[in-house]
Image (cartoon, rainbow, N blue to C red; front, side, top):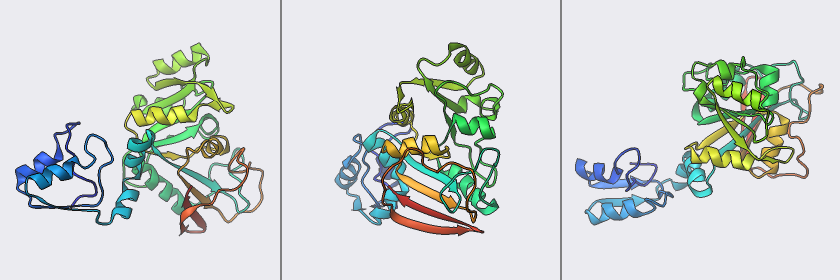
Length: 284
């Protein structure tokens, strides 16, 4: 039983089809066809030709959601992007100086999302305001790739994302014309610094997503603030929106999605409660 068609090509490992045949498996139940053009039906054909019974398409919709990151990268050349925001009841994020709006249970869920994501993304505003580590701490899991959108290369060399034990696991996207002295210091600190063209008052986030896709990133969790989150939504780069709402009204924080006009209808809604906080999640 597999969630994806057994591969028929050489990648980091030999073809799965060869291993199945060598093991003497007589029946394969696969949830969905592999969209990778190197396989894309070839695995099923080779198994059938060898006399193996193949039953494809079992629980295909569930498998598509499970494999949504891989499918996005293969078909669209970019990761599947989840934009997560914590807001007040009237749709504002935390004001400067306030670290968390939501409670411990919601925070634990965010760390579970980090563990399940290949990369976590924030903007320079979050780095300067909060100095986040962007690691998995509230649950047992693995740390994702840390991605910082930093147009002018303002990330301090003393930031936690730079001083991490594995700075090469931090990607900084900066403008091609960013200050050379600052970019050189960051490179010397060991982070992976990548230059991008400017767009939409910041960086070309479409180019950033394509770069991540080219480097094998299937899923991105955006924990960025309103400016970057708004740019992802405006640019059609956000695939799912997750809004965690705290039981707080008012405040001095800015609106959650900067520069987003009009409305967007969410599909496949999921509503959950984490203590006193309520999370609404839906596909764009």
